[in-house]
Amino acid sequence: MDNKRRLHYLEAMGIDVWLPRASVPSRQPLSSEVVPNDAEPETTTESTTDKWVALQTEVAKCTKCTLCKTRTQTVFGAGNKQAGWMLVGEAPGQHEDEQGQPFVGNAGLLLTEMLRAMGLTREEVFITNIVKCRPPNNRDPHADEIESCNDYLQRQQKLIQPKIILAIGRIAAQTLLKTDEPLASLRGKVHTLNNTPVVVIYHPAYLLRSLSEKRKAWLDLKLAMQTVKDSEG
Image 1 (tube, rainbow, N blue to C red):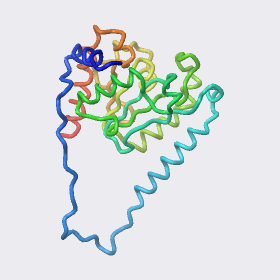
Image 2 (image 1 turned 180 degrees about the vertical axis):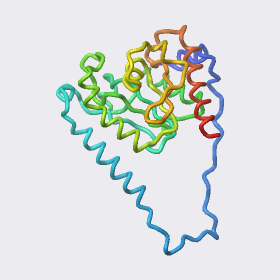
Image 3 (image 1 turned 180 degrees about the horizontal axis):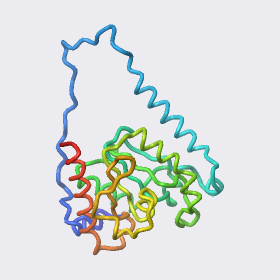
């Protein structure tokens, strides 16, 4: 997607594309700070890292469903593993299957700009999918395939402990919220999954085809931002 077209889509959503993100300087330790000799060793980070490595290895070798026979590689997810924002899509497409990364191609570019409009980067959020392997011909994932990956997704959420989850598109929303309600009924409100707020948003691929829905999409993003702000007091 060329830059002119991308800007056109974002302007249609009412987004100030070039709104600068305020940088937050990292805290430098004071020279007078001393770590007590009897302080407890910091094992939490190492333990969490080990869990991430084990989970990613398990996903890469997964043969729980027939998608393992047609995939090029699994798409585990990408981004900050301590993110406040967790984005969950439906399933990898062709480009994701080839590159092993979630949300690439035109839809991925638009998602990146949507994040940027909220003052976020892809490196600050964690992006994954309901299903970790590409369904053939980009069909909708089957119920058994979703169930096979459900444990992986739950473990990702438990490790990240995000402040909010964005359910990207109908299938992701219906799966996470265990409902068959249409997307139109699910968006525009705050749901809950394992005590974590969930906001449903349109899939970027859909937005690329449906210019008329883009202002609604920006309203959903603003709802998500307000939800996080409220949770932080």
